[in-house]
Length: 247
Ligand SMILES: [Zn+2]
Image (cartoon, rainbow, N blue to C red; front, side, top):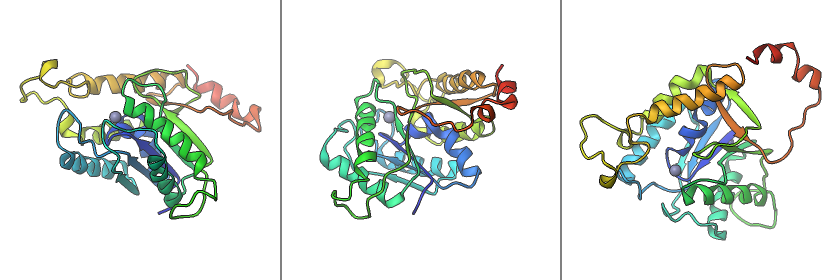
């Protein structure tokens, strides 16, 4: 299926956390959106691969995705190999997205860093006719990096005010990953994860608030592009309405 925007994550919940509000907003505008996780999340501290697949499907439904898929790259071993690039190239060619979202290239989790490198290379390589996979050569218009644990100065912020509540619903579809008051063993040595802490949802909301404030909106998601953005009419782009929204 042809998509307008496709987000790649190393693990099932990565896209929801980093660009979930934007994907929900785009789906609401009538665009076709998708999420592809490179792994099945079998190394996760909590839950099994089967449970994560079910939660992934539930989150996809909440986000109104047209496509959601898990690839078979081993979790915890997302490596920058030609074989893995071919898998991603095949997906890009199958869905022909205009925009691709990928994790930022600096992250604490090596899977996230390698996923970033793999997707960046594959976006370019997918356009080379001589690389043979199922599907014709196709290169997306723009690769956009999402925010993970490491902050960056954004190239732009997308207003997700109307989508933020739904984003939190999509994240909470990952019930096996979250803190539950009835679950014991929350000390770090017994498998506590960042996402499993009770305050995790507050951290996500606070980050969305922080970036929203930068553009005069209640909630926002921050993005980074490596190539310059073209603006044809700066007077219109930075016009009165734009200025009015800056706090
Ligand atoms: Zn992840």
